[in-house]
Amino acid sequence: MRPGHTVAVFGAYGHTGRFVVAELLERGFVPVLSGRDAGKLGELAAAHPGLEVRTASVDDPASLDRALTGAAAVINCAGPFSTTAAPVIEAALRAGIPYVDVAAEIEANADTFAHFAERARTSGTVVVPAMAFYGGLGDLLVTAAMDDWTSADEAHIAYGLSSWHPTTGTRVAGAAVHARRNGRRVRHRNGQLEYHQDDLPTLDWPFPDPMGTRSVIGEFTMADVVTVPSHLSIPEVRTYMTAEAAGDIAAPDTPSPTAVDERGRSDQTFLIDVVVRSGDTERRATAGGQDIYAVTAPLAVEAVHRILDGRTGKLGVVSAGELFDATDFLDALAPHITWTVKP
Image (cartoon, rainbow, N blue to C red; front, side, top):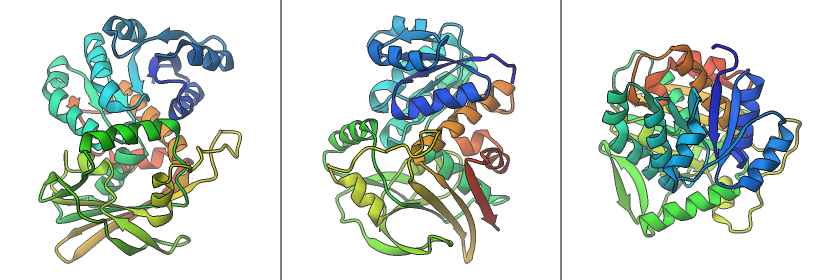
């Protein structure tokens, strides 16, 4: 990476956006603070003297163009991504720069693959959706577990969260997704997304120590059902969530995350347990760390770092597991996560 690369951060003042700005600064990038709320941008800029502020709105393409002027890449941290992803991608394509977002919204990510794959490829740039805890990290772990397999029968991604205190952005995005689905649920079966109204099963998942076996909600579907099948031949991709965390996110009065350390992380811990199966053979990869929102920052910034360094060989809309060397990428996330793979 050439020191001083400028990276625009849209939604910089949001909970995850602030982690992304801090990570960019720590790694020698120059963030441009962008978003629609000039007051919140000003407050963030006061904490980071010298950084440029560029107010922009997804309803104003010219303002987005100004926000991205001179930037080497853009990271979109502003949800709901069903509203923000397409306009910011359009601006990135006009600017000819890579786009990375941290979207956990299944339909928004599916829309990005459906609507921008050919245009991004033709323009000679790369678009990476869901480069975050949900979607990106699971995809990397599945890809690492697959190793030399070219296909598998099933992939299971179990999220062992000690708790899930949602941010305001998570609440807003969740409401947008709920409205779009009209009360339906979504899952990945037979190689495609399908909507349903079935009750979600509860089962026990044998997480590795120290978490151990926990009750999980089955088919608690997350963005991995878009990222993983986008490049791996796995017809059944299923995700699970610890029952306690599922209860937290469902309750309207669960508080927002509270910082407990100098990096602003909450005391939430997580363990992601991935199992891929081909016939009677299983492979497993596991990763653990602290604070799902905070760990999204090194994921997104490492992605930008590698794209700008030229350590990718693909163009278009590409998920993390396809674009990067999964094992090397996961190793680079230390000390933010620890991970293991069992072939």
